[in-house]
Amino acid sequence: MGGTGRLHAAIDGRLRDFIEAQPMFFVATAPSDGRGHVNVSPKGMRGAFAVFGEHQVGYLDYHGSGAETVAHVRDNGRITVMFCAFDGPPLVVRLHGVGAVVSVDVHRISDSCGYGVPLMDYRGDRDLLVRANSRRTAEDLAEYRATRNATSIDDLPAFS
Image 1 (spheres, rainbow, N blue to C red):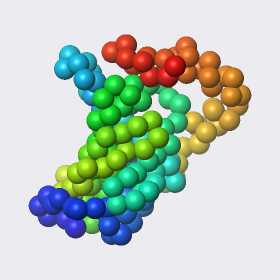
Image 2 (image 1 turned 90 degrees about the vertical axis):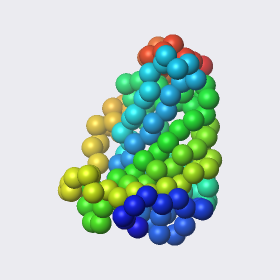
Image 3 (image 1 turned 135 degrees about the vertical axis):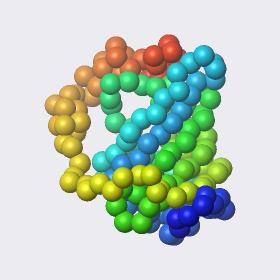
């Protein structure tokens, strides 16, 4: 799977296995307005990403310090999800698609060598986000979204 970059017709079993084995991935989005900020966010926690089919994926987007990804997806839907092999054979997989707040319909699947990605040891998921949100009620989380995640840094609506 390494070497020069390749395009794939679908997320097949081998790609699916690689994707679902990664404890961390990155999402990139941008607003329609060319003056807005491009956003790249690290995501993770085992089990947070799922492959629903050959051209559809989804992930749990936990509450965080910003709302760029959801605001950009609501604005124009464009999203790229990238996975890097931090151990084992080097590989980078990118899924280019159109997202909704629920999932991503993938229209381009590519891989490339991960020769420049460092080898790293996975020690486990951080539990801070889960612990912080488990102390909040549904009303607390709704208030957080309304007061801290209502808009992106470019003032695009994220949560209503």
